[in-house]
Image (cartoon, rainbow over all chains, first blue to last red; front, side, top):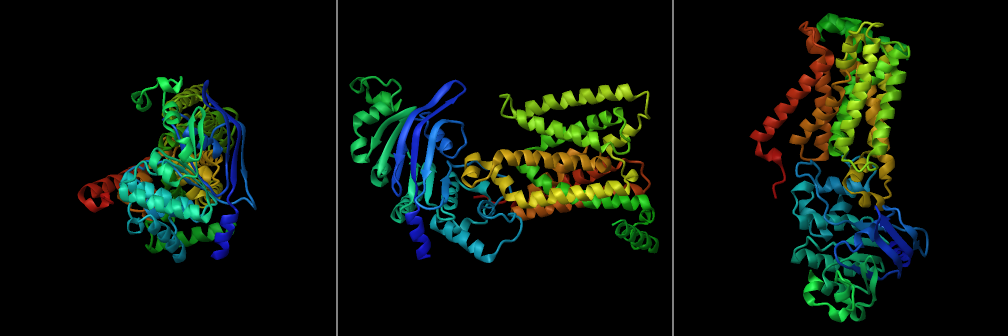
Length: 255
Length: 301
């Protein structure tokens, strides 16, 4: 176990975006993204809706055709990439329990076959970390948005990732959920996992992130949260009219 | 291989004569029919759970209907009209694969695209059939449309068995991946699941199982047996386990009952129609059960 942990620590990758550009149907979604996300650090990605945060992650996962290059620089052999999507929608009537969902993701043995007892136990342990082990037999569709988000978090931790990508993990969470999430993030940080994390809650970013990157079509701000999250930089990031910062009012920033 | 087959057949006939099994099974063709049903029913039930989860019901119907055109083309080019498998496989695979290729490439919703393909294929099939009308007995089309279980031959059964094995193996091996890729493409990608490849594999599974079932259930109704048992199971199941199990059992019951009941009571009903009526009754029973028993609605938070 200790060995594995050490391996994870050593094996976190650096992610390098090299002049990444993404155009869909004539619209430029991302341009000139040059970014280096150091291994073992927590990187927050912020920006307005439609600014390209989710597109950047889709490009990172190889799901959209982009130009430029995205490299994972693994110190050793390629490790595991974990992904926590934005709260997924499930049909309420789909007869898939939380356990079924977890099994489907982790096992090649069909979810409708009985699995090894130890395997169920591993999944229950992961669910326990997000406070969902007592709801393992609930249907996915019957969970609240926050509960579903916790399940997504639990699957992202299995097996232990070297790099974890999170797409607005706190959006649907209540206060308790947010605390559970922050504690998990902290423990992943301590293990030296590379984290890339889309977040709207800027105070959470300030508390937890090592670097923050503001994205609106291209990179608008980047650096340590203390320095990068200046009022002017944020006003410009969240504005629709990227003109001289002093001409922008606070209302425009929220509009 | 054929020895195994005849041993099974003789044993069943013997049991039927002794009165252990329904009396209609004393006839060879009835046994072929039953074997075909027992083989294909559970396979359709299993694959059907994926069809329902992946929302491919309309697609399955369309592939089934394209079988009609496949048969028409087969007869036109001179294949035997009792089993024009070459053009059946050829046309249905072409239909299914090109439909899947054009999905996400036309900017149209899947159901619109399927609607267009379905009508084009039916129009083509109808045209070819009318050209053929003078040459062959048009009543054979009834068999294609609604199934003619009593003409199932030993070769048909071997074909069914072969396809059943392929479909079950691919389904079981890929089941979790099929399910995950239908939820979220990024989540699937992070788990190294090739969603695009799986979509093609899935479409081909539906196509070959449809073609193989045309004799038993008929082109018009084969899509229904992919959907109804799984839909029925979905209304009452609480987990994947019961969902798949019930779907397989429902499909098996429907096929066996749909084949045996008309033979026992001498009803001149086509096998496909009888099978779907049985499946439909099970579906209605499940829906009623769900309405009456609140715990089946499950997982109220």
